[in-house]
Image 1 (cartoon, rainbow, N blue to C red):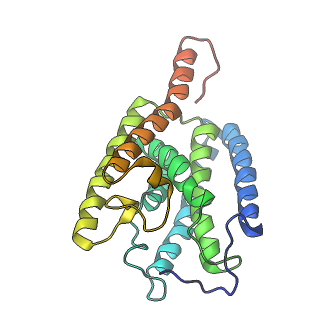
Image 2 (cartoon, rainbow, N blue to C red; image 1 turned 90 degrees about the vertical axis):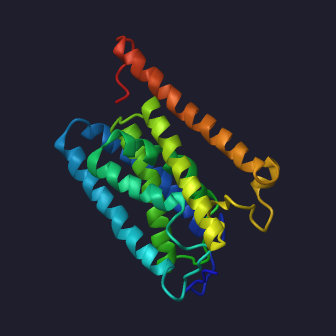
Length: 243
């Protein structure tokens, strides 16, 4: 079990959590404005790379901390969750502006990393190092998705959607096999969590996995469709470019 170095324990939706949520909203607005002012300029490349370096600076120490003897928990802290992969995708997307990496950052960041923001698995409160690194990594991944798509206009398309679905499927199969071999349950792919959760509404194993797949595919499709329509309308000369 991961323990805290702090004397104060984090409270979900307490004062520090509310402050983080406000910071996320303010940061999102600022980055959208900044990104739109930087479109098609060298400034976008420079800022994006520094943004990516910032994620690395926070993510690496967080992983070192979580896998140190005091914090390590084989069933929880190995860096194989999709949130961990989302941080890697965000760094690469910021550094290169590649469409497939941006798509992964967009889908994983806005639907999976946000879960860690809304319902954080965190015990330490501010100013504990765990608190700072946890929120720094997760907020920057979400903000990277917002900056890339709404700021720089690197909108996802159906190809990016297919890549995100395929990549997520490969992750799920790989982690499922790892769980079988190691006796773990990352991603709750092999069993439901021991306590009550939203997965209880989706039926027993493996049917809740089937339901999750359908929900993710549908939500990501809905997240893609408006951008595809905007791009098509732009090409017909009806609307300003979303990119």
